[in-house]
Amino acid sequence: MLLSTRYYSVKSRSTAALVCRRPSKATNGSNAVAASFSTMIASMLRDPSLIDDHRVRHGGAEDDDGDDSSFFEVVDPGSSSGRDVVARVRRMGREDASRAIERANAALVGWRDGTTASRRSSLLYGWSSLIRENSDDIALIMTCESGKPLHESRGEVEYGASFLDYYAAEALRPNSAGGGFVCPTPFAAAPGGVGGMPRGRILAMNEAVGVCGLITPWNFPIAMITRKAGPALAAGCTVVLKPSDLTPLTAVTLSVLADRAGMPKGVFELITSDGKSTAEVGEEMCTNPTVRKISFTGSTPVGKLLMRMSSDTVKRLSLELGGNAAFIVFEDADIDLAVNGAMASKFRNAGQTCVCADRFVVHRSVEGEFVSKLADRVRRLNVGHGTKDGVAMGPVISAAQVKILKEKVDAAILEGATCVVGGSPLTDLGPNYFSPTILTNVRTSSSIWHAETFGPIAAVRTFDTEEEAISLANDTRTGLASYFFTRDMSRIFRVSAALENGIVGVNEGIISTASAPFGGVKESGLGREGSSVGINEYLETKYVFLNA
Image (cartoon, rainbow, N blue to C red; front, side, top):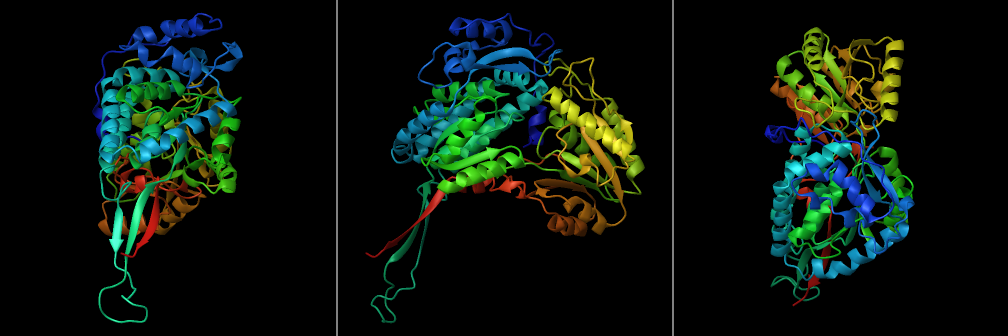
């Protein structure tokens, strides 16, 4: 889950005043929701209707009793308290999910069979255009609920829209829904005969899988939605989306804009739930036989749980799960280029992506230069609230994650690691901030080495031979991404082939784009997202023998 480098040039207007404020205490009912938004975000937005009060209250549910317990709070992790309420969103449960699935199923035939590929393409282009037109507002909403710096949020809006553009075009390709191929048969014109025209034709036809359940994480609130919904809708599937309870507002804005783009009712359903109801919503999506595919981005343990729950109905699965990326710096590397790559890969979104470099494997002869230059860059990182000008890194998502990071750093130091930079929470900014950190001499037995970090900590150890570097990189049960830096072309091909990962960056720290297949091996998941491969995840192949 990462941003293409070309989106880092997106410019922003001054945002010094756009710091999310604590709202007044809300009361029950729709007026309370409206007041909460007018206090928090709506006054800052160019188009306040993007956060539609009805949608936030109901999230697509058909009834609302106004009970305050049926709402959950969305908080700003970057606030000084770490808990400032941004908004209150409807808590939906199993019955809501079941009704959303029914609506998606009712819309399926009209979308799959009654809508041309050209029309689906046009709707996706229209959706992406509206997203771009509202990029500043969407970015502000995203920053206030996820904590990432505003320039990263703006970059993600463009990145997310690019998936809709890509799959709008892909909807028209011969390998999309309605496409396929024809091939000759081995059958003679008459049983036992030879020569003459073959009997019949083999037709292979691509068809939409059906209703798809999409479950997305908080760390990329828009891109993970469009990367799944884009190919699903292009293929003729209808979708039921369950976004993270930490970042539902970005999903609400996408739903609003999908409606404005003319998306038919039931084609894009949204379910909002929190910790009290997410388990039952997920279970309904996985066990309901109407849902024919689940696409999930998140942790490996949750992915395994969804696999088990989906097995009784033998669903198609796309799983983009955890990583623990290695970042190898060989002795012939361009060190300045490697440092640039490390900064982009490690500290973007405060290190909270599945493809962030966690384990830095550096040749002994260049470790000193690499660590020194990296430390100099890290010390200059401006950490703070994502809406403030000049901020390069925001908070991690919660105080609980800060505690985990601190425990991992302390354990590594006790085992012999050296803390070069950082290593502690930044409590003066709030409970959810952790200093960007570099550790050297990290042991492979350390918890910070053998498990995904999900925080702004670079763990460094040295190697002496190419074989040792590859062994260290592959010594993990996950296999999402890895990176290495070298000038040796022969080594580039050797190491790329030897690394057990679905994604490999060579002399580059950020490598994702809509036109590239994204996904992992081993316990990092199943399937691919992006590129022409991505739409195949939402298609079934039907074989028809035509004897005519």
